[in-house]
Image (cartoon, rainbow, N blue to C red; front, top):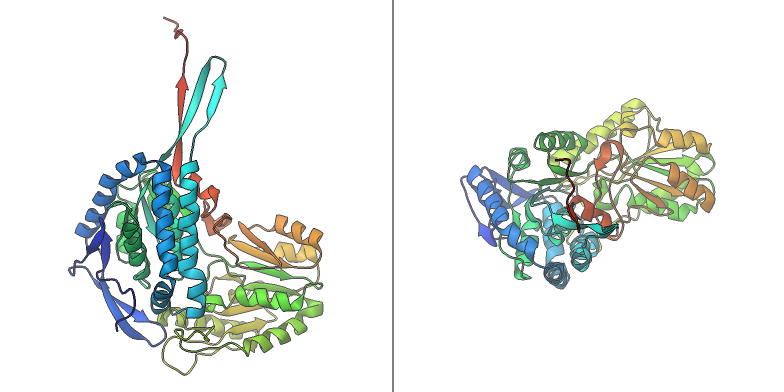
Length: 485
């Protein structure tokens, strides 16, 4: 199949496409049909070495450029991404199966936002002067060196930019490994960056499975590792990076709570629950999949939710009217359907959906369980699919305890018209990213990341700069040195 912006090789290294068919073939499957649309080849040890050597040799000259010069290139790349948003969105839909209606609004555009934001910030990355009598100290903000980015399959264009933009703004080079499930989009990000003027070797993309990721994480040439992925993968990568005392950012999974109080606007709360459970067919790490609804409005909430789910347009994701697409792979579909069976077995009430759709590709219905108990598997484990668990509550203190009773701490949301309660609840959530009367907003200006097992560090905003740079202190003595002998 031929489609717009189709990459021409598996890897992008030192400013150009590179192919090495000696690597293990990885089929790229279009989730809407199950059809193979491309084949890429996993990076061999020679490809890994080539990418790391290119990054290592190019990085110091890039870091010596002024922040203004670096920023200008990133902003130019942002403009190119926006100009090509349609083609990049079509490619993202082929890569992930997400509806074009989503990708045209969120994916390449949010990547461009990151490039623009950090491009604008690059010139502001200064140190400080600290006067100490006649002596003084100044600080320098310096690049870390070579950064490795490991992406997830749900937002391949966005994640490639969320990691690349702050890394490059700070003067680092990057080797990015996308998920083997969605390997195409990051190659176009690399291509656009070079077209915008990025020196060869500063942003490289190589393909592969976990073994390639492990080789990157443990390599002595690597100074920083940034992963978006599951908690089990994060623990392995964090441990491997720690063995080399490498800097890390871990953006991991969640089982986030959404609390809907009795005074909430039900229409908005239902809208938030839809965004927090069924956008991208439920394949979003921050999703609010434990929806705690006050007993007094539970049935009204479920009724309106079902009515709105009836209006979902499920179909060809390349058609702009479609707003609910397939899951990314057969395996992920089977995982989600397996949790549906667990929910039934445990006695939760299936309110909506629950079935695979009788059509090609990896489609299942949006699914809602009610009367869910806190100890049920569907309320404890991350499903990463369109399966919502609705739980009852009638007391704020009780629901807060239950909402925080999880190993995860990525996100949380509250719907209420009582602003005092809204801010109190947000303050008491044990989560890094919270929402009041909204859900899953992720502007580049705001920090994004989790607490507890959901991650380490922050992406986006000025906070990300702290995770892609380091401070050097320089003490300047103005007088003579006094020594004991």
